[in-house]
Each structure stands twice: as C-alpha cells, then as structure tokens.
View 1 (spheres, rainbow, N blue to C red):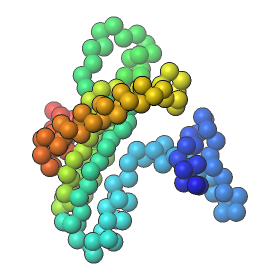
View 2 (cartoon, helix red, strand yellow):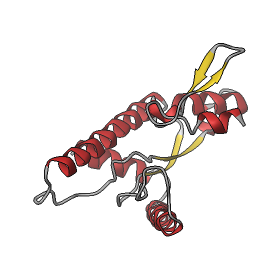
View 3 (cartoon, rainbow, N blue to C red):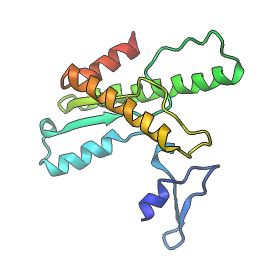
Length: 165
C-alpha cells in the first residue's frame, strides 16, 4: 500500500508520503524520471542469467507530448506555452529512449508506443470522467494495433527516425 500511496504524491499538489521510521519521503517516480529502463533491464538480467538477448521490452511513453503535428497558427500565449512543454517532454523521452537503445543494443525492443493524440487530463486536473478515460483507452488501443502491425522492433525505430529528422 505504501507504493500505491507514494505513486499518487506530486510536489506542490499532493504532499510526499513520509516514512518517519526510516526518515524518508516518497513521491511519484515520474516526477524525476518518466520511465526507468536501466532498472527494468537490470531486473530482467537477474531473471535471465545475465543474457541481454533474452530480454524483450515493450515501452509506453506517456508524457504530455503526443506524437503528432499541431497547427499552432491560432495559439495564444498559454496554449503555446503548454504545447512547448508537450514538445519538450516528448523529445526528453525520445532522448532517453535513444540513449537506452544505444546502451542495450542486444535487448529486443519489441514495441515502443507514444500517444498519437493528446490524452485527456480531465476537466479538473487528475480527475477523470469515465468517458475521458474510455477515449484515452481507445487512443492507446489504436496506437498499440498500429505498432503491432508494423512488426516487432519497427515502432521504436520509427519514433527515433521521426525524432531526429
């Protein structure tokens, strides 16, 4: 239960979960790092006897930066700033992905997904209506079907190629 509680804490919004016995505070890991591929690979290496070729990774990038082109012609200050943050997050995640793929060349990067549409954050931040959740699920299912149709290993390379063009 401590892990679940800690994953809901965000500095400035929800206070950190404090473990007074250990003298530590815990926050959502995504605040510092959206995804932690090195820890996942290290964990898998222990399970497969140290053989990188036996590791298969599927990565879902869920930053606010959707993989899409936007017509920003009518954007004013705040929408432009928000889109800037989305693009910055997208490229930050892609940089982490590129570095991880370089570091773990013999790992099977089966599927890598990122939303092709902006996911709903809810009318009130962090509060999702059922219909908004369903829309997000449908976007994810469509993106997963597209990645699977490309074939194993192709979606990761496609995203990298798009990001460095």
